[in-house]
Length: 332
Image 1 (cartoon, rainbow, N blue to C red):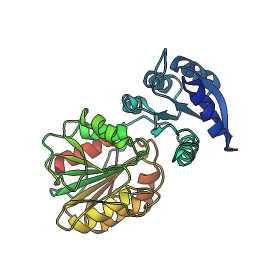
Image 2: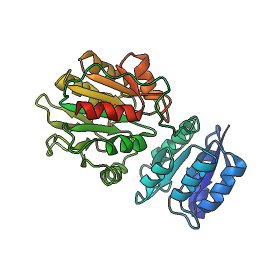
Image 3: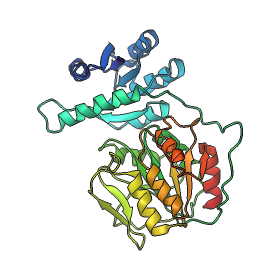
């Protein structure tokens, strides 16, 4: 049984979330908190398997509550909110994932949103919270390939926003190549994610668009609900094709496209995340001669995607974030 703590200041929403979670026999609502301070106290006392947290709460908001919980009693935290104004600060503090709150039962899409909430809570309960990014004691191998790439493609999922921000924040400006990014995230949060990232890193971050050419020094982020791929002449395309590995946008679709267009003149980086999206695409990039990198287990919040890449022998290098930065700085 997965024990869930709900932190939500609205009594109506609390009851609704309790009802949604209560429909699944594998979930048990262990406690409910009316504000962030109570959430902290209950987290310390109840030791739940996962916390479903609101952002805007009295006394102590979701951002500060998340930070204190991660300091005192590290617990997987799912941030469910109707607003993105401070949501990404909660990711910085240690929340694993952002979700939009399900609408009322009679609203269109509410059933699908409720299913996603339940599925996410169950998945995040399995995550061992890890926030160490220190390099491994045996040191990281330096990549043999040191040619200048024409593009860098990056994929991330659970735990990705934090490590993407850390990596991009340490890159030089100007960055000599365009960077393409697929970050698994609930639809509706991508614009806020791009704004948040753009305010924290020294390189411009934009939502990818066919009208905007690939620009060296710019991060082009896949928008919600569409695959990000490239044409033969290196222009961005967006499409509504079927989900790949359960995702649209899919990291593997991007990596496949980069392999086809740029071959050995590319770098692929697969970061923390649950599942296997991106691993087969990274293998295609490596087969095409590209330099391929997977984040190491010690620094990954979830070693699912990069671990699958290692299993497929898709990653030429397995590195912690500081070593990934060092590699990209020397290449770009």
